[in-house]
Length: 467
Image 1 (spheres, helix red, strand yellow):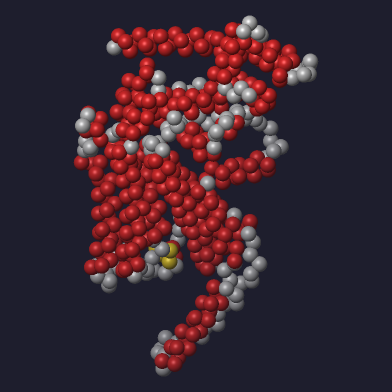
Image 2: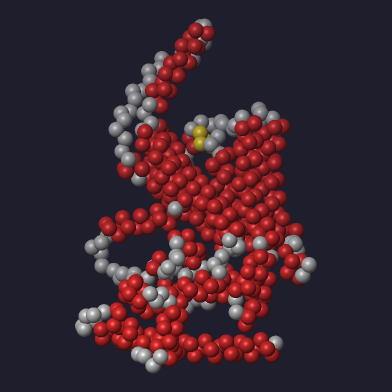
């Protein structure tokens, strides 16, 4: 076992707390549910253990524990078994002059301490969100749940907080809708996070950024879904008419029910009023969990949809336009690839054109060859801009390396490569001069970059040989 493999198991005692703390909390609630007294009123988290049926509550605790511990467990498993595979893969792909750099950088990543902060953050966010989803239940009365009859904060209620004293029934209805949107938004983000972590695990791309991105996604998605709930009634108006208020007989404090028949009649009347109230719930309300889950699973697309609506409303307001080229212009670039590169700070072609393929190969799941191809494509697309798709379609040249190879072959054959390209690009005499200027400039830039790359490679080889 070498030094890097030994470091994988060299974890200080406090790193194991990320496994022990959630486990102890959930085991404590489970014991309270199974053994704790039922007639004692708690004013702390132990009260949660008596809000549900004990068996049902303990089942929810098991699901909570699994949902929380999957975060540190996957990180620890990845460090122990997958980082060495990634290092061997990069050693085969990267040029020999930079292989020592791979060994040094991967050694720093193959340690739980690299993931410590991001794992604690994500585990805490998941624990809080899952508790709201599975363990807490809203109630408008004092016992059996969170008593929102005492009021709620502005985050969950917003302008509907004024209904607290004016219309308690409408207040509680909006409260349940807002909590539903918040919880299902978190659920959608959590499901996406688990999928992205599993995908990153098998593609050798599970970094600390993956966990930070998941934690931020769960927070942002929950808030986006909560904002959606405030406009839900406006977007999906209900045509249902409110039911008439149930008629109840006045209660005489001086008398008790005279017979069990009176109690049965009261229960029947109560049940009938419940059914009547339940019929006032609009059918469109079933869309709220679905839309909230969508906001959680695709928060970026949901945010873009909101942005487009706002920009459409504010289209008459002057402003500077953002003209960066999207990564989708590159061949082989999918939506998932775009999200992964954006996580590393490369959200457009101009940024990617100056990236280091070895650095990105260490930090992401992409191979060195694939990244080198994308970066070369981005360099050519950044210089040709909107003309890049037409240039690729007419010439078949997709990146800077292919363009340099073509021009070098033309020079060897004593043929003007720029003229050859111009003749294939346009037959319009008015457009020919502009293409000639662009391609001549690209030829000069390619020669300059090639000379700089050769000098850099020579210096690196000399340093590697002396070292």
